[in-house]
Length: 183
Image 1 (spheres, rainbow, N blue to C red):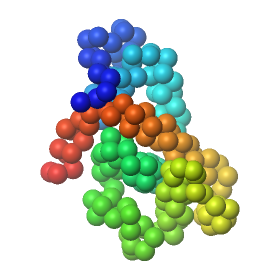
Image 2: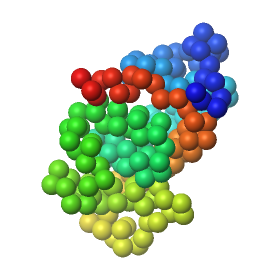
Image 3: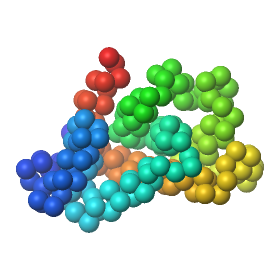
């Protein structure tokens, strides 16, 4: 049970209902973290804008963004975000074996060198204090330009916020995040 109860859809301000309906349509369920954010409508609206700007098509493939989100959430230990990012990676078509091997990214044959560099950045950026080194950035620049690096760091920073939000509220994980993956 979450430390702060999510609002029900019926309790949402009329202007927030379409926003949460879109989330429901995209995920297949109503996300509890959004229903908690809805207690402060400006936060929910800002989060929607941030999500849209980060996940809009860019020069970094969506699949890599999903893996970076998963690594960031896994490294930070946020169970809610781990469940959501794993679910999102699965829905994006990433192979279950690759999702399961996320912690083996440094040596597993399913990961490219570019993915290794991005996942290294995500893993060490999720640490407290931040553990990213100049050497990791140098390696990253072998595969990504500055715009792409900004895209990757945007995903990491987004999940930095969401990991703290959901861990602090102990947001209840929706059963639907596991249902589709097990089929």
